[in-house]
Length: 397
Image (cartoon, rainbow, N blue to C red):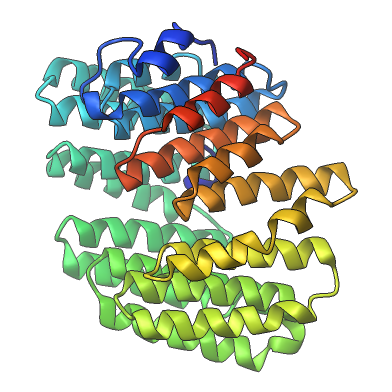
């Protein structure tokens, strides 16, 4: 199970003051105070989530976003509400790394010990290995490279116990990428090569394509962009060869991810070209829900490139299509994605308006959490009109 698919919020502290004044309690970074209002709303909304796993996913995401905004103490308070091991360890490790970066070594050590204790008690070898790999990254952030390497050795030992080649290949790629980021280039190359050899001949064509894209991403993390580009071209070639097996929906999503990776590698022209190919395929998707979802994914990738205007045009064309969906579940899913996509394109008022229309505590709290993350990434805080929209979602207006 991949750790980064498992993230999640709960009770509210002095929300009115947080929203109206922009600061409920002291923060490590005052500039993020108003954004705390968005996270406070997400936290409040999460209390209505019935499923523990869903609630944990949102809570862990909120905790880590508080870390990104420089508020380790609020993050720690949220993390204490998480019940599940995977999400709790993810949040605890992120908080510990931030305490360390602030020179709060005792707090950091306590956090790392808690994260390790949770991981040690995880019975599933696959989950434990992913948790260890994430913890290694947090040790690296804290400047504790020796501990990071020790933890990765444990993760590698766990990977060797897995008997399913696809799962092992994904995990080895993750470990290899982290080894490379720590400067262990030779060992990283060996582990990444094992990942490629293990996963290359197993699984269906869609699974092989997605694994190649993941391996390209991890090669980039390991500092080997040349190999990453080779894997992207291999994935593109495979998509072309098996396009009849994949179908337009899957191809458009694979091409969108491919474009994102080209952008990460600095190949902007290639990224735009691949995205255009993905967009050209969308009209051939017969299912309206799947077609709309593909357009939203593509718009999100445009937002990560110097193509903000193209993203905004695409999103504007989807507002009515999403709101007019008659199926409540489809409408909720698409509205959540649309709200997040608007935020990533810098359209925060539209994003919060869409988020306010989401029917469902999990989806709404998730959307508001990701909108808060987009504020942080853009270096912005909610404007007065946007604060009103946040208060409305919380039931204060």
